[in-house]
Length: 201
Image (cartoon, rainbow, N blue to C red; front, side, top):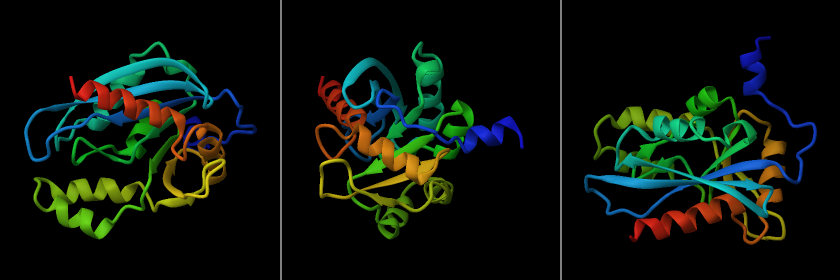
């Protein structure tokens, strides 16, 4: 087995309480317009300690989200300390879709996506028909796999995750470990707050 395959199937013998997780979310924007949207990433040690912030911009309904996010991470001094990438879904800036398998391939890090609601794939597919390269976008969305229910620590409200590069059991442990102040993991909650604030400037 190649080292590349081993990286893709990374297993954590122990999920450490201070595991470094990067949470990524985008800022607000006006749909169906042209322009760019800020993307914010925050480095969290476990679910308690904020250690760093990264940023980039992506095109509304574009095709550069995967490349821009990967470049933002690999150029950061925090990159070598990261153990998991966590995204707020796979659609950013409208339908600028993150290919989580490609992100895992480039970064050699596991990727977890989180959504509050289970994606409605029928309506998503319909909405994509209004955009160029609709089937290409659709293929990337479906390649992320089926959403899996997970109940964060101290919550009765289920959320949904998709994963690549780690086991479902490890992903659930990391989601629960980092959900310290709400049912959304703290790296994503803080990334959302910062991205929302920057987007209003």
